[in-house]
Length: 551
Image (cartoon, rainbow, N blue to C red; front, side, top):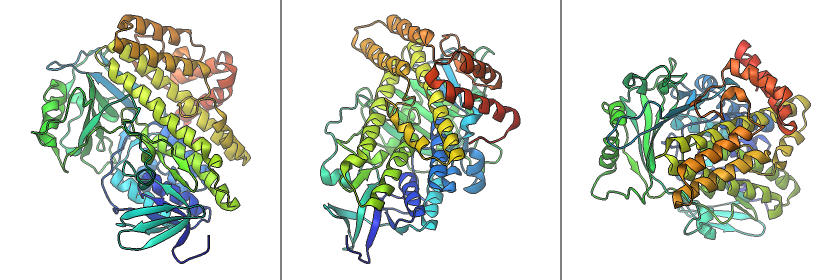
């Protein structure tokens, strides 16, 4: 491509978290990058809850691509120090089953504690975190056009051209679409699958609120039914038949300067069609009032911004890469915020795309085959998450069956994250990027624990069994027994966490349990996982005892 004034190596559409991180990585490597967005910062964005898998990926991106500012998103302490004190603390995932007109059964609740080795997780106040990342991208040399409306794109053999509403055009050797549902690439190439094959159905109503009271003030549970951590120190999921509320506090630690909580509800539109005779706010409160404890927690709350109400949120694409273009996670597809997969999916796609794109730019070779893995990963991330969330929605009328989904999901995320930490440590100590690349050799890309045949088989049988329950082909009791059988027979689950024990409702990897897990990892863990479980588990315990950072 001949050099012109408006020519770049890469144009990135979207300056949210995804686009800004990608832009910063490319510019840090010396590439000429233009960031384009139809809006400007600061701005409201949804997708606020993290999980350890997200945080270890953000740190890995910082280490691998030499952009330490991305790592500043890797814990609440660093987010507060480097970005500001508007984000919240996330120490756990909290789950509670509700039924119309009733207070919840105190027994029907779960909590999954995030171990400290996966960092002090965060509820991002996206208005501030996204603006910070955008400024990082600019610092590393990205050019930017905010409030720039794209009206067309040309995807040619030798270049891509982006045309603006103001009559200007910009050229590049490659286009990264980091936007969302209204992706210009998806629209141009008619990539959306209509109808989407995704099984899950949900629409959303959400806002930010003040006056949300900690749930713990409204519960007087027995010791047996009290989780190890206060509910208000994590992300709270109030689940009911074919729907759930989220409560994501930004005001739940001493250093917070916020008084806000993110609050919303996900509803299956087949069960709960949009109430056209109600405003979004009226419909939201109508659902709140169905559940006495949720109503009690939100009784004094009021919104600080307009409620957003959507149609069905699920969408997917026929492909996510092509000649001289690629779509990041939310441009390609979306499922549901239930298990906080959005930002971890984004980080995984950026990691797999960035090194390939840097090599393609250096070699001037943009063949689609070079980026094939990115497309496979993207499609699998969406597919596995769709199956997981759909399975969860089916189970909520049956707490015992829901517990099987909760256990398979929660434990699978731990070794998956340890695997990333272990490879990152090896790569940093050796300077060998091959440790990062070999992470992609797992047989099941897109699954949180992608190199365990037993976990994959358990996950697949979970999906089959729960769908059989929904269709009436299997009883709840039979499916529950079958899935607990998988967990109890698995040689890849350490006994100390109680994952296979139906009586263990709170999965709590505290120091004592982690010490026992180290011994199990050294003596009994399967060979394929022993190295990263032993090494990471030992580092985990050392971190608990000394507070020394390992990642």
